[in-house]
Image 1 (tube, rainbow, N blue to C red):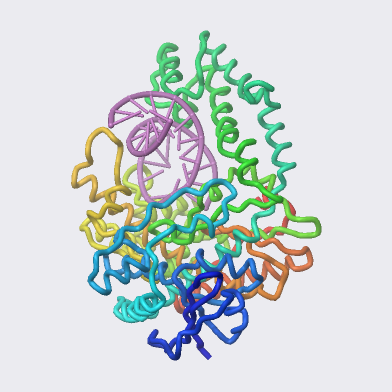
Image 2 (cartoon, rainbow, N blue to C red):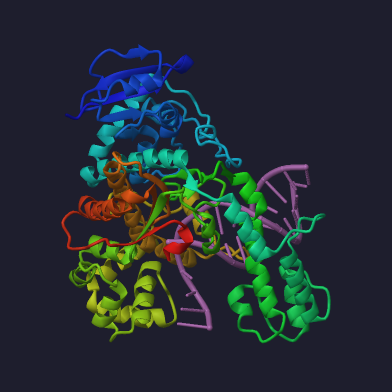
Length: 550
DNA sequence: TTGGAAGGCGCC
DNA sequence: AAAGGGCGCCTTCCAA
């Protein structure tokens, strides 16, 4: 039924492995086998593999054609457990966990290194202190015990399982890659930026726009030097405190239009231009280097290529293989739906129990039909808006959805008072005063923030943390369910961005995949949050090109 | 030469 | 219109 084995790589491509009891204790002799992938592949009856680190092992299994259903990643578990215990920031390696367990000096984590473009994730797996198989087994057994001590042990176990599943998904997505047409990308760059000059490589359009800016000011101004631009506007009689887009938009001066266009195109040129294309696209695929749980709230990050910040205009280059499709699915109004589920606010759950436009429904209930106002109010409540119309609207929101607003207000107060907050499944914010906390809440440079200012910033952070992080909880379960439901198809998960997934599949599987995504979202809602009427609908598009998805 | 801060902007 | 949450990464600027 639930058959669980631990495994670790051994010298020469071999493996050490052992069956485990439910309490984590070894259930037999430690075996030594000559081939890691064969050791796993020949044991299909194993329902969960326990290992130190997924990036260390799983890419090697995938390269040998071995897929696993479930795993338990000891180092992921260590981070989650440390967090839950209010010790986020302590070294997270298995070796560090072992040292803590045996009262030995705890080795620091090795510094994280950014990937160089095109590097496989297995290669930038951090090099850290070795740990014996026996020690790993002891750490694992202790982690089982620590889960039992969590505030909600079942949820904590689910969190570790889903984070581990996320590690499998990440490795599989990096292996598959996001289909990317370098040819389309190049054509797009030439269309937007013009051809490049032979000498400098500078695109023609940028040079032209820079000349127009200079012409408008009547002197040479370099648009990529904010200080230069600021001075030029002041000389022209316009008071500006920065060169931010929203500030420039309010100025009546002929330099503004070419300047704004320059900024947009310059960003594309530097962030997703020809050199990015050369560095990051190989064999028609983009491999962002997904890192599950890379942020304290549980959102993922990517390593090196800006994989979660692909500008909309560049998505034209994401093109399915011939005869294949991209199923692009975006969870609709995810954060307010998650707030409904975690706060159990009756009114908001009723609204979120409908798959239709949530902001419209909220506006009908509390804002006499003004959808824009309703959306601002909801986002303001989730983000901790402190001024402007948002505050006024928050009062209306509180009247109709008191439990929902109280939930985020309580989280904010906990943060201000230096207490911990947790996501629904138990991912926990950094403790107040920890280095992570300090680095995160650092304000503008000039003056050190006062204690009161820091407390308010922490309150806004914890307010958002419980919603954003619980949404990340849901997303992990959704991905796990989706992954399992498409195993028998040719379809491959190829992209994930907070509340959006892309599956690459043959055209005749697309409808089935779209249905599988919706089913995964519904199932994730029930497993993550228990019985609530809240629905988690997707906006889904079946397209050949990502840019056509909306 | 290198590393960090700051200004800015892309994504959610 | 302006202000609030989470990120990565580009540039310039400046100090070590």
